[in-house]
Length: 305
Image (tube, rainbow, N blue to C red):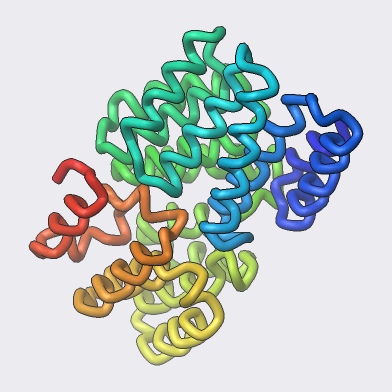
């Protein structure tokens, strides 16, 4: 129970504590499937937030999800956890679909299952389906901040519904004011509505490893402060370039610097960056979508052009 409470706080510290508690639960009760699944979800969330390197977070999530499936073959949750690994880390869309279908066959759709099905549809560019599933995830568990964030960032931002994205993200923040990179998400929604000063203020509220530097670099560029943007980008590369290369690519793309954007996308691919599965229709990459290298990159990820 304590581990589940820690997990809902959506911060790096709470997730690290949740890992300890789930492992303790498994030590005390090695057949406790829910603890294994909770551990898988926690590692997956930590990987998605960039709080652990992808190869560490998602391989641990995979191991825990497989354990959960072994301990309770009738539970849909470990299959949902495995689907997340396939979506965010493996980029194996067919395997993710199979796991989600198995979960759905075992019982009513869970909020997290609907959210992951929404993410899978979004990754593939099936936006109507993604939106419907995202709304369903929120309806099933309206007090889960993650479903509001996913609907806002993964769906509304990627379909140019920026005001709706802002609304969803603000709702998530009302529920969990310290949620992961929510301030960065909100800043992006504001920036894409040309509210640059407000966006910059939100980016500055974010932590240094969750978008403060990268978001500020984009907002300052939009405000015409090129030198300040350059300084923030240089600091972002120094601090987060190895751990979040896809975001460096987004900054360069937003600034119209295509060669640098593709260089960093290649780095993100090799790193298996946790955000790369949502490359399709990413509004921050709009400036490079007409480049042949963009379609080639989608093909490399087995995504439709």
